[in-house]
Image (tube, rainbow, N blue to C red; front, top):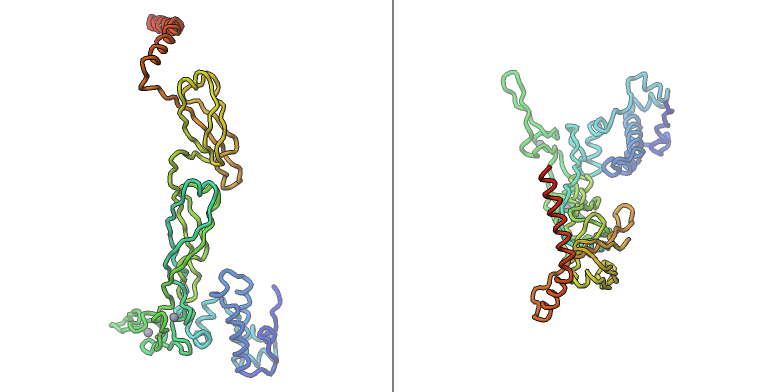
Amino acid sequence: MKGKRDYYEVLGVGKSASDSDLKTAYRKLALQYHPDRNPGDQAAEENFKEAAEAYEVLRDPRKRQIYDQYGHQGLEGSGFSGFGGFEDIFSSFGDIFEDFFGFSTRGRGGRSRAQRGADLRYDLSISFMEAAFGVETTIDLDKHETCARCEGRAVEPGTHAETCPHCRGAGQVGRSQGFFTIRTTCPQCRGAGQIIPNPCSACNGSGQTLVHRTVSVKIPAGVDDNSRLRLSNEGQAGAMGGPPGDLYVFIHVKPHDFFRREENDVICQIPISFIQATLGDQIVVPTLNGEKTLEIPRGTQYGDVFRFRGEGIPSLRTGRPGDMIVQVTIKTPTNVNKKQEALLREFAQLDDNKLGKRLKNILKSAAAKAAN
Ligand SMILES: [Zn+2]
Ligand SMILES: [Zn+2]
């Protein structure tokens, strides 16, 4: 076990410090290390407890005398063993905290009143290209933020909350019924244990104001439809010194007229004529990075696929881009003129033998299979 620091040293005061010196010194440390101001900070928590323990001893003349004479061991012999946790500290120093902060940050019942703010959701529509390349944009929203005038304390600056006279700060009132005492939430302070005679004029005593905010959002390249971005601490303000919630931006990617996405590949369909498919050709196709030339080989079939490596959408995780995939479809001519028709019939006659032979073979093997 690590040795305890000297209480005077903890508070940073001399051995002859007066009551008000001690209080001033402790106030400074309590404000600095208050758990609501240092959420999750282990070191601050330790410092907060250490200062509370030092003050608890030194403000009590009897304990101070024992400590001055016998040190930490003397106190252990007298039954004082420090604080178990925050709730101990708050229940022991409730009045002091009210005095320090203008209000008690934690209810006397030991229940924490600081609450994290609610999360916010915002639905953002972006274009296919913005999703592919990323975009920096802003979103406008109305949200509750901690009131600047009263810093969330709900009291008019310069005034204080007062202990509720009805329940004397307990937040609950008891009513005897036969042998039992039934405790209910105090109707005057609604369980808070305190009342605010002068509510803050900017927020009407709620501690929060509704403000219009423009938040900038950086959408990374490669986001997909239905992905979700979290912006920490951009949600609703917390209550009574609690941290704010988060803002979740839900991304909706509008479909593109021409491109379709599959994982990180971009797919498009290009129609070519059956002449181009038969004889081969060079065509220009659109990609995310502009137009590219595509070589159509002779004898290309309907549905054949051509790939431009690395011309797709970058992976969100690795940044490595997918491919651009061009799928060929073949247009069948519809309005052929007399001359074209004559040529096609001539072509068909020339091709007839080959086609006819292939068809005969197919029929023959089908018949053989049926006979077996
Ligand atoms: Zn206010
Ligand atoms: Zn009350």
